[in-house]
Image 1 (cartoon, rainbow, N blue to C red):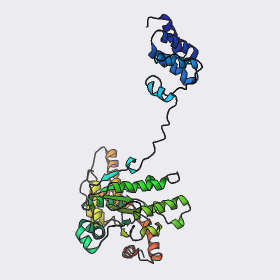
Image 2 (cartoon, one colour):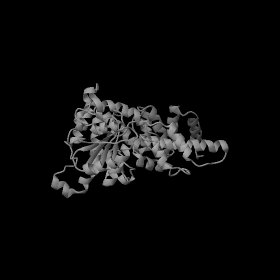
Image 3 (cartoon, rainbow, N blue to C red):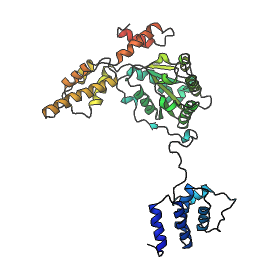
Image 4 (tube, rainbow, N blue to C red):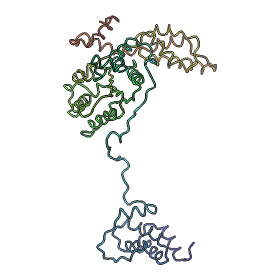
Length: 403
């Protein structure tokens, strides 16, 4: 309560009728006369928020702020920006900023990219000895021996394309290469690039490459490269063709030096990639990543069972019955076996371990997902291999007697 009963009564009335501007202005006049300018400012601001041209409220605001009284007819305009800043703690702003409009991006340094430091190395990749040898010869060996690289004139320009059936560890292998090199790792997917606005996709792609250049040495991993680098002759969208053109430009490093940027790409459909992406200097080295061999399958099974309660499991025998299974299929086998054991534990009330019988039953239930991919790849290897780029795939299919 104040020392003025009239002000107290008007305050209660304004609180009960907050939209009565006449009553609020009368209260503000009394507050100014009583020397309570701070309270008057709040009421005058509330009136001005609803009626910006209210001369009485403008006069009271000026008087409460310590200035000379303003007349009703004035040519001066109100500096709303300054007033909102001064009175921000008293009343809310007249116009709220949209919360769904981000500030404009100012180059790659202002963008949020997941730049990682991989702790995985090739030693963590089970099996795949042939793949590791190819990586060592074409990629890692020249990198580790700069003097020999200079002697033989071996260039590190260009990139490596990993292809094969889904779930066989192409992404894991890319992370292992980055860890082996001790380089930063940036994974690029279609959602990082494509945007509905004209030109935004190309800018996103450029900023990603700029970020990789800024974090060199860096492994830039282009996942599902066929989605970004599809054959332009098969594209009906002009915007997607410009995205492919931008990708070609970035791989060439025309606008920026790509030294220290090692490009790895992965795809399940290399036959859908634009031929220009695979010319020398771009993705000029190709590596087929096949389903894990027996040793790799045993290592993958052991990895996925390491934190589960198991007893009496012969990994070798399970590996024997899971030929042609991908790494993802093997993870699903372990998950299914765990479900079998958990189901029995719930039914009987006695917790039991995952057994060999569970693993074999799970292997019978989970079928290899690579068969569909090899069905498509067989047609390519037989009828679209004029250049010989799928000779390694053809040899594997012949070994599996799929030709």
